Amino acid sequence: MLLGLAAIWVVFALWYAWWQADGHTFTTGWAYSETGIRDALLHDLPGTVPADRDVLAGFAAALPLLLPIGVDPFIGWAAAVLWLLPLLAWTRRPATGVPDWARRALRGAPAPELSGPLLPRLRRVLLAAAAGTALCWAGTVALMAVMHTWQPPPERRYGTYMLIHLTLVLLVVVCGTLTAAALTGLTARRFPLLVALVAAGTTALLGLAGAAVLGTADGCLGPLNTLATSCHVMPAKVWPTVQLLFPLALGLNIFVAAAVALLCTAARGALRSRHRTAAASPPDSGPAPRRERLVLRRVTAGAVCLTVLALTAAMSLPRDRGTGHISLTKQQLIPTAALPTPSPQVLAAQTDAWLRLGGAGLMARFTTEVLAVLTALQDKAALTDRGFAVTRIRPHCVALEHLATETAAYFPVPDSGTQTRWAALHERGKQAGADCRRGIEEGKLTVFAAAMRSCVDIGASTPGVLDSINAEAGRGRSGH
Image (cartoon, rainbow, N blue to C red; front, side, top):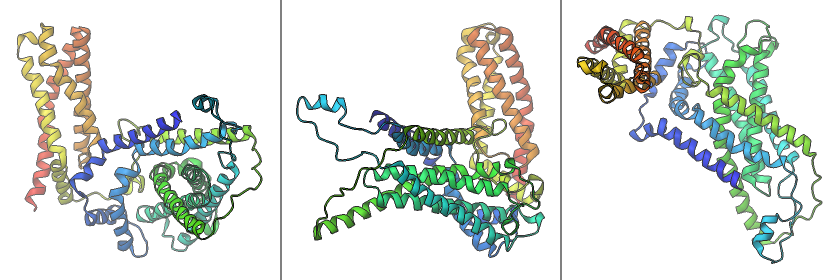
């Protein structure tokens, strides 16, 4: 019971952490332009699909909701806790009587007798998961067969075409997962919600695994070939697809499955109450289910838990250096070399938007902190009085460290060359801030002096970078 309460607290804590990080932005209103997103997809993700604009209109409406919620690692961990913990209940020996702590609490009163096993047989849960998994696999095969009939030329099998394919694969997995949740919600007599979560999570995992296997063999499947142009079975080529779909299939999808299970359980309860009103049915007195092998249950549950936790941890790790978690971005859907170069007018407008949405604030704060350090260095006590350094310089060094983290989480500057200079500036500021703080705290004058020289160099480089950004944005304003 305590473990279950702790798990619920973890789920709520992770949701709260997501709300503090991203979710609170929804309180200010809908900040996304569906028209702008659709036009960007048409421009940046070209491809040959029927009714291109109608399909992309659906993506433009869904992406702003999926991106901040569906792919956040907090949601993935919360979903993992929500369905893996109930799965562990089948790794314990079946209860044969009232627990000792309950007998002690009764203080000599007669203990109630168990009317039957507390948990349903694991085999029944796995049967529901098998039905959902079969639906996922059959749906993925049917999807690949249909998409093969309007497969574009090899050079255009990216962008919109690939986006359509991945979205439909995700929808197939979601349908299979919700089917498993609905089946268990309608049939489970005990703990229908917990049983449905286990069935839904298992279905999502196996359904995604089936899609990954078919994606690995893509190109060797004849009438099922969808994206690949030649037959090369390479598991590594499907990893980006797993990175893309896993946070949605085993993250937000699990919470949707829980809602479906609750609705099915409520509907079954309403129908049962009506049936009992008309004619009470005798309780089921069938034979008790046969005990499954405990070792097999533990091996099965352990393998599932380790797989999900390992994949969830992999999805939460930064990509390359300083990059956040995996996200549905066009870089994952189209080769970088195939991205068209934006026109000068578009680049200027993008830079202007970058400034207005928060870039100007980051620039102002960075300039303020660097100038504060340089101003403090004008005092002779800066390098001789440790107390002066603690009160007048250290706070700005710490601010430079934090500001570098905030900048890395914000959108990059649209111009790639300027973004490289902007990121390098903050990387130098972060390093100088860390050395400054360490030199003051540990009393190392040489480390502190080197950090101050870096701050002077940063102060000299900052105006050029800021002028480049402002000049680019100015061309966008003059074009309106």
